[in-house]
Length: 264
Image (tube, helix red, strand yellow):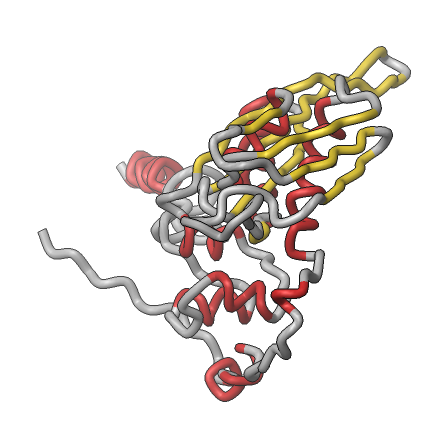
């Protein structure tokens, strides 16, 4: 009688997650709603609470973005990602080789924002997921301009720009409207994701190394805002950085909002 009862209690504890492994592991790091975002950085807090209205405010003060959710918050619905390549890489060990997979992922909104992520992992799916996160963290603004007269919307690179990675050198040259993207397949994907409609390109080096080809193109695209053209000579009137402006707000301790109970 009593022994059977205690056995039953012990069994229920084990199955329903008393002591021991398994059971209901609701606590810990992954607790709560998986889609709910709890920011870890000051910038994340300001973004989530609506203090920063546009992603351009972050770029203006060169604030480092450490959370991929910040990019999702501003560009989420418009972002498209594409896996450029998945390649196996090997490490020689005493027992033979250890193979891992390296994923190259480009991400962009086809309207002035582009990111490139590279991640290596034991599994293909994990590598792609990691590369997408890294691509979001590396999203940069893209400057577009005109080939000739300033008619309509900007459609090409504002000036000749160059990017280099390894032996690969990529040069982007402005093109007249209607030319399209005159380019190899890899830079073409990146340029179209960045929002360029017309562009001539010139590439030298070992362009068969896709990783370096993509990185060189990304470097060239990011150089569009690094080049100071005469129309940007006017003095920039800076306001306070968001960290300074909302310093009193950030000084308060961050508390998670209690979840509303749903009554069935």
